Length: 312
Image (cartoon, rainbow, N blue to C red; front, side, top):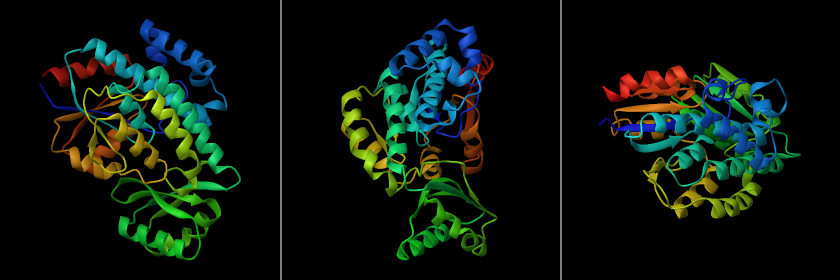
């Protein structure tokens, strides 16, 4: 049997209509949508399948993404119950989906957890003009030095997402980020693009969200891991509730080391399967570890298609 990493993307992977093919063709998916919506008092069918403002609000974006990912994973497990994960890995929010897929938290509890995580993040950023910026075409060390020098000048800016070589997202105060656009370009960046986000993920601005998130995680996360989860913070595997609570609390204010995590596991697995909308991680994996074959499951057709690869 092949060694497989089950992987899950984070915020930014959402799209109107995601998961609709599952919903229309699976009673299991339909039931999961209904139960998840009842848990937090919303109609996920309306939020995800119809044009609306809520899908762009982080408190709803996060549970919507997680729900679709868990539907995809549930249908995969029902179709191929003999396929076991060697490990689980997620990007930012996706680490919560990884934790859920690993069996350490029920998907209904996870929906509530990330719904409140999104609200805590938004509250922590209120009045702080928070934002994020993608730096393209500049090496990590140069980005890190510019951030460190800016911090010495009293500016709020931190490395936030290590996605691939030449692509690092920074977070902080939006005005401070904008003031450094020319600095990044003068250092060699091809682009320094402010993102359309109202939160500053994975930096010190989110410190106020850490304690309320920890309290919720203590309530919902268990020690029921089927396989280890790779930490965004350390790039190392963990498989206990205590580690999960500590590392996911830290994840709020520390950068996501996705690139480093994929590089660390590439030699340990034969392939990766990305669950949920789109192929964000499949694209990153192609550039980070080109020999790591990555499949994706985003609808019923792709669910059937993976059978050939997984079972061959």
